[in-house]
Each structure stands twice: as C-alpha cells, then as structure tokens.
Length: 419
Image (cartoon, rainbow, N blue to C red; front, top):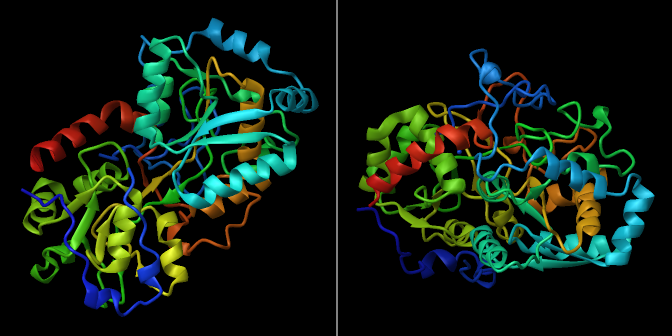
C-alpha cells in the first residue's frame, strides 16, 4: 500500500536554503479523455484557440446538465434574471446598498488579500472571504439549507464544487444576464468569442482560466536530472522521493492521474503510485512545501500559485512536459458561480463582473498563476509552460462531459489501487 504520511524534514537539504526555512506553511486543510469542446451543444462560445477540440471530438456529444433532481428550472432562472438590475449603474447602486458580499474561493493568501482590497477600493463593497476548503463550504451549504439558512453569495470554484454541488443541487443562479459591466462581455475580448460558459444551458458556470496542468514539479536543486518522460519516474533511485496530491478524491490529483491513466495505463500507475512508495496529501500548501523543502523533491499535481513564495526565496523548480503522457488543461479555481437565495445578490453580481473584467481577471490570474481566458490580457508574469498553445488538442479536465461520464471510473480505479 502506498504511503500516506509525511516523512521527517530533511534538515541537511533545508540547510542549503536559509530563506526557505522561514517559509514553511502550516498544513491546512477530470480520466480526461474528453477534450475541450469547439462549440457547445447549445451553440455557445467556442473553446479557446489555445485548447481546441480534437478532430474526433465531442462536438457531437450531448450537452451535459445538472442532475434532473437539482437542475435549475427555467422559471427559477427567469425569476432570478428579472430580479437583477438591467444596467451597470443600477446594479452597482443596489450592490452598494447591500454593502457586503460573502464568497468562497481559493485558500491561497494573495487572492484572499488582494480581492477584498480591490472590491473595497473600487466599489465600496466589503468582502467576507470564507477560509474553509471547497468541500467544507459544500458541507456548510448543505447543513444551512437544510435549516433554511442562506449565507453565501458567490463561489470561485473548481469543477467538482461548481458542477456537482452548486449546479447539481440546484443551488446556482444564472450569471450570464448579470454580466452588464461595460466591456465585460465584449466578444472581441475573449478567446472564446464571449464569456465562456461551460454548462449546457450557457448560463450558470463561467470559466475564466484555462491553463496547462503540469504532471510533475521537480525541485531542480535536489533533483538535477533531466526528466522528460513519465517512464523515468519509475527509476528506482526516485523511490520514496515522490509525493502526489491524492487521486482518490476530487481535485487536482485525479485530473493529473486521469491524464496518466489515459496515456500509460493501469500497470504503469501501479508501478508509479504503489511500487515507488508515493506519499499522498489532500492539502495544496503541503505538497508544494514538501517539494520545496525536499521531503519529496518530485511532486505530482502541484498548483503553481503555491510555489511562488518558494521561488522568491531562490528555490528553482522544473515542470517538464512528458513526451509519453497526454498534456492536459484545467481551470483551477476559475469557475465563477452565483449562489441562489443569496443574502447579497447584487454585490455578488458586481463581484462576478469584476472577476470577468480585464482588471479583475488580471489580478486574479496573477495571484492564482493561471492563464486568463480573456484575450486582452497578456499574462507576461506566467511561465510559457503554463500557456496552452494554439492548434494543440489537450485533455480538458474541466469539460463537463468528463465530470459526468469519466470521473467516477477513474476515482474508483485509484481508490481500489490505493486502498
């Protein structure tokens, strides 16, 4: 059975990086065979030019909607849309009267600091930013709604929270008609020819990031070897030196694991995850911390935003493209969803407009180290390795078809493998 607990820190490795010793974070607490759709089945915006669909693709695949038991009804959508002010000035005035917006978003510190500051400065709206993980927020919503309580206004989420929890349970309000801020919905400002709504109704789930997902992150000061294939990870000298975000739960681990599953098959995954004695975590900070400190200098499934402070401390990382493994794209915490029955619905709409705007998405992209879907933002702060290239078909971990039809079998495989 693969290891699941951290090994002791290697003091001799950390001693090489005196600045690094001050940067330890506390530990806190989709098979991607479907490629990005070129056109949605509802006739919505095309997928970004940097992540086109393959020739075999799913353009003919049926649209994916929330489960019938939780799918927002047309009547509810119409009512919610009618309640929204028709113009930006009216919406902003109504939001200022509410004065506050309560959101769930990425736990990374830069976003949690800068987003509230910018909302207060630009619009005079206070942001209450929940500190729980997405799964904890989902449980909180379920508990509150069972008691008839409603406290959350908006989520900046990953695919599981957006599709399975919010849309799947019927807890989302339509966002598309609320994008009224000047310039936000300008077709020429988006790689997709307009705001990129991923749900089948083209109303509820707005994706604002589309980034390459590195399979591995390597601390090059501790692993100077060139690793250019997934097969090289099976070298016995790396046994016990690899960590991974847990692929048995929803999140980045299963996205990467699914790409490896599609590329290399089950036997390879057993040799990698089990025989190489990979150690697992479900904490974004921890896996980055392990790679930086050298506990596990090779890490599978690291979110780029969590490496930034270590890079500033002088630690160098490589995220090589594996020539024998499929490249994948993902959206990070880049799915914007309005929560229905919100206590501050207009402030939530203003925040959604801001995140979708050039200035707001620039800030969000910088703090999250993700590639914006807007075409009028030049992400010069990002390494080229994160930017999808035009004309290449990538496995899309945020395609709703993947979540609806492929995620469960992949999770089941990993749960049996790593039981």
